[in-house]
Amino acid sequence: MNPVNNNSAQQCGKRGRDIQLVLERWGGWAANEYSGVDYSHIAAGFKGVLPNTSKSRLSCCDSDGLVVDAAVGSLKKVGRDEDYALIEQHYKKGISKSAIARKQKCSEGKIRLKLMMAETFVDACLIMSGAKLEMDEWTHKSEIEKIT
Image (cartoon, rainbow, N blue to C red; front, side):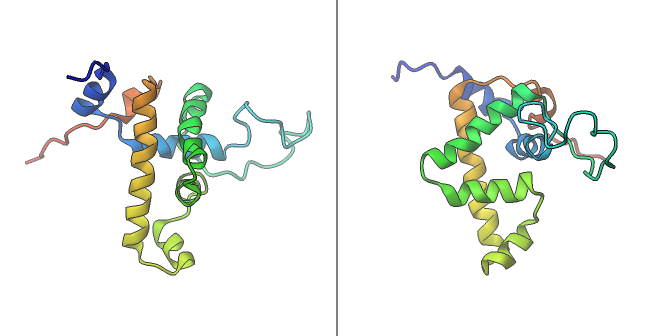
């Protein structure tokens, strides 16, 4: 028997994170230029002068954003640049799967498959790191009750 502690994997196997919800919140955080972890794009004192043009998106706290950002960044570290680009286009920039497929001149099904593989990689990175996210309460998979 493997002596490695599999508590994180066992917990996620029972009621794991919905990685798509995690990435949606990360995308909202990463797309927000005022996340607090980067330099300001607007000079001090002028923030209220310009209208807020960003659409309202679900986001996560900075600590969760940094953890997920590291997991997403692992795609680049292992040479999966195309997967990284897909995650960034779909979740950070909000580009639809069909629009990505048209741009790449391939089927939407192929984009869905590639995106699913990239999502699984990011999810595995989070599981293996044992990361506990503040957003876990809202992003765990749950069975939907049948309404009759």
